[in-house]
Length: 178
Image 1 (cartoon, rainbow, N blue to C red):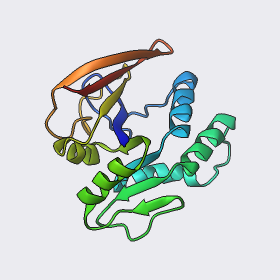
Image 2: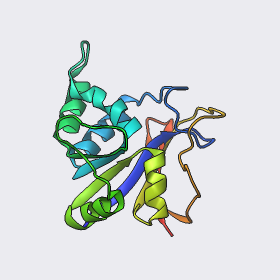
Image 3: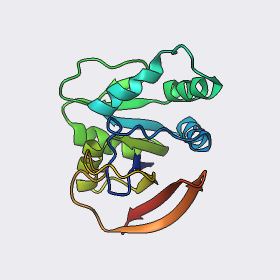
Image 4: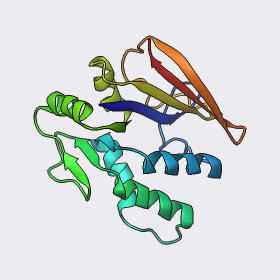
């Protein structure tokens, strides 16, 4: 059975809007993202975040070894995309059909390992269905004041299960539904 987790970079005031402030990870944090991605059983994305992440499908000029390593890990990870507007998706990605809830429940039942849930709006739907097993907040010391919130809907009762510190500035808070 798969374990679904939702994790994103976040400001202390609760926003994940990468357009307003680039949450550029430190080298140490980026290394953690590479390792995490390499070990995923898959990623489940909403359309917006999938389109943003598809940047990693093609090598870019000026990438260093770590960015190439992340791109390879991302390309090798199976991806499932929830969208009502996309007609096709890129390599190693599957567009989910009309029975989105049924297909997501099937993934959870049939896939072994961790599946990353990408995007606060998709995470909201899965939270409402009780399908998120863990929340990972990468808290950056930047107050945004507005933008897209980490929790796009109600905040479920959570229990803190772990903390990790990256380069002194970023803290990962790990929660499970209570």
